[in-house]
Every structure is written in structure tokens, then in C-alpha cells.
Image 1 (cartoon, rainbow, N blue to C red):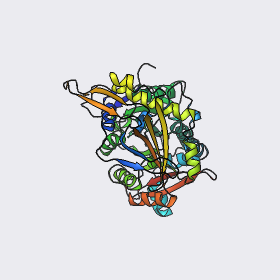
Image 2 (image 1 turned 90 degrees about the horizontal axis):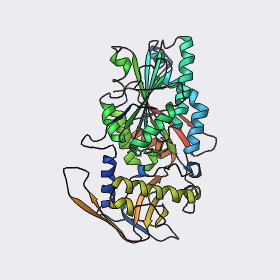
Image 3 (image 1 turned 90 degrees about the vertical axis):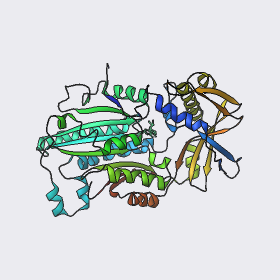
Image 4 (image 1 turned 180 degrees about the horizontal axis):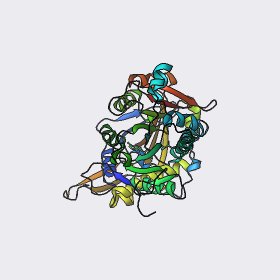
Length: 415
Ligand SMILES: C[S@@+](CC[C@H](N)C(=O)[O-])C[C@H]1O[C@@H](n2cnc3c(N)ncnc32)[C@H](O)[C@@H]1O
């Protein structure tokens, strides 16, 4: 694959694709003045003031991803596999999906027999497997509706957003390789195919872009002067990323999409893990797991490599780095840390080529560094959070007795 359409929407002062991540790591390792603490009965107290962004903690080629028990990973995929057709019908069908909230009469009036362009924006796209599963259902539904001539013509663009530039490119290349239903956004030959684009940036970078109709109004269909094509978008926020936030944080985050991004007919598809069984949660992220240990050490190594220089040698992810977890009863969250067995100290230079300043990072022997957290919100609280964000639940799907739900959310009146 020679080139792939990946736009970089991160801070424009960045010189290299890795730079804004580097700033985030530097900021996290500088630590803040407040010392936090978590106390789990039967375990030593953990105190911390430094962190490494969760985005660094991705498997590398030599780590078996399947050995990592992300609670919702397989459940969300199973839901998409089973109900993908229903989601696709709602997203690509002639009736505005948000019209499921209105009366049958109003719904009929909202029916759109014209052409439709659907933009699927995948926030924190990661491995792309869930999106691929959903897009295959959308492709099938498009072909089925095409046969019925309703809507007249449907086209789809898939925009995978992630902060990890290299990983995103590699995964998009894999998706395109040997997959005839997809077409690289760079190429002209894409009639009838799902156009694939990469967007390297954070959730907030993409929020800014979407608020200004980026990713939807820069489509080929739009540029060809076919503005009359109905535009609909669906924003995917999967992998239970919502549970990395507290409920007030999640409600503010979703509220920004509800008020600034969702137009009439647009939707959000959000995956949430509700597991409140602490034993199960702790077992899923077990400190005893070789795979999890390898995974976090690899994350330390990634962060060191991005910092470069002395940091790459000191944060090498070797056996010096321990993986430690705690259940935080007070806040109802599972917390994951790394801890260096020895004192670590290194100099880091500024990201800006014009700035020669350096700073010293010091980690005490045994100091804890926060790497990830998962809140375990109850079903009722999650649904209240959607309500507070100004979002209506159009539909919820679950898998058998599992703790995972997929919610399709929308607003009765878009912006
Ligand atoms: C938990 S994984 C979810 C991956 C995939 N969506 C899934 O459901 O399997 C989180 C992904 O989001 C990315 N990510 C984490 N924080 C992000 C942020 N603030 N902005 C954009 N992407 C982020 C990470 O790089 C990672 O690929």
C-alpha cells in the first residue's frame, strides 16, 4: 500500500506526527502537585501524582492480544455481529433513525427517498475490527436497499480517528488490503465502495473538526456540487471508552457532541461495560497475567521511545517495571499502575526545535504511575448520564447475560 488518506488534525505547531503525544507524556511524567491515593482492603495503599497516557498501552506484534481479557472486547464484537444488520438498517435506511422517537405519521414525513451519504466516524478506532464488522453490515444493507431503489443511492465514508499515527496507518492498510468493499480515500476509483480515511488526532481535535462539518462536507459527493444529497453521520465510541471517565466528565464530553456536532438524523453508537462484579473485573486485568505484564511494559517502552534520548534507555520496559492494580471502592473504579523497582532519572529536551531547554524527570524507587482506569458505572447511572448530555436512547443491544451494552443515541431535534 503506497499511500493512505490519513489527515493529521493535531496541534499544527507539531513538527512530527509523534510530537503532541510526546507533550502529553512529558506533562504526565512531570506530575501534578496533588498526591492522589487509593486504598483497597488487604493491599498496601497506592499513592501517585504521575501518569502515562493510556494511548501508549497498546499491544505490539510480539504480544498476544488475545491473552488480554478486555471485558467488553469480544462482547461488543458479538453484539455487532448479531445485530449489525439492525444497526445498519437504522443508519442507512430511508427513515431518519432519530425518527424512531416520533410518531408513525411524523416518521413517514421524515422518509427520505433521495440519495444519502453516511459518514461513520470511529473515535479511538484502535484495531478496527468492530468498525469493519459494522461496515460490512452497512454494505449489505446498502446493496439490499439499492435493489429496492430506496434511498436512490447510498454512499458511505468511514473515518477512523486515533491518536496513534503509525498504528492507525498500519491498521488502515490492513483493512484495505484484499477487502474489495473498501476504497482508500486517496484513490479516485471508489464507485460503490466504502471510502476509508484516517484521522490522526484526539477526541477533542475531532470534536473541533466535526463542529465545523469537517469530515462530512469535504466528501467527494459534496465537492462535486451535490450538496443536496442528504448527509447523515454516526459517531462510534466503542471499547467502553466512556468508562475511562467519571460520569460528570462523560456527560460533559457527550454533551459537546450533542450540542455542537449532531444534526437531525445523526447518531452516536456507544459501547459500555456495566460489570459490577469486582472479582470478575480484577480477574480480567489480573496482576498475575504474563500477558498484561508484557502489555504494560511494552507501553512504558513506547512512551520511552517517543521521549527519545536518555528516556528510551531508562524507560525500556524491562523487568524493572511492575504492573500493579487496585479496586477503588470510594469511586467505583478499577485502577492500573506501573512501578519502577529502582530510582529512574533522565533529561528530556523540549519538543520545539527552537527551544533548547531540558527538564529532568525523576521517579523514586517504587513510585506508582497511573496508566489506566475503568469506572464501573451502573446501568441506571449511565442512562442518566446520556440524559444529562441531552441525548435520547434510540435503542440498546446486549449479548445474552453479558455486562456489555451498545447504545444508539440521538437527538430528536438536531442542530
Ligand atoms: C480501548 S481502545 C478501543 C479501540 C476500539 N474502538 C475498540 O472498541 O476495540 C482505545 C483506542 O482509543 C485511542 N485513544 C485513546 N485516547 C484517545 C484520545 N484521547 N483521542 C483519540 N484516540 C484515543 C487509543 O489509541 C486506542 O486505539
